[in-house]
Length: 62
Image (cartoon, rainbow, N blue to C red; front, top):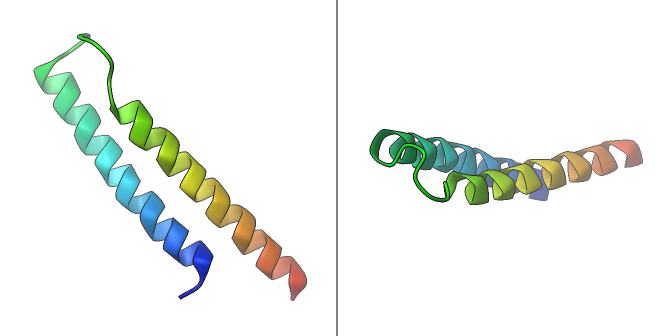
């Protein structure tokens, strides 16, 4: 499997994880402390960004 596809699947997993963490935090601890969904959200953005860069680089070669 191509690297950009792996990174896309990882990004989707972190997207779901971000949603679940944020939903839990807003339901059980609204406005209380640090929302750890930001951490998984940043990892998700990095993963999608790297996937996009690799995909674009591979397509420019062809």
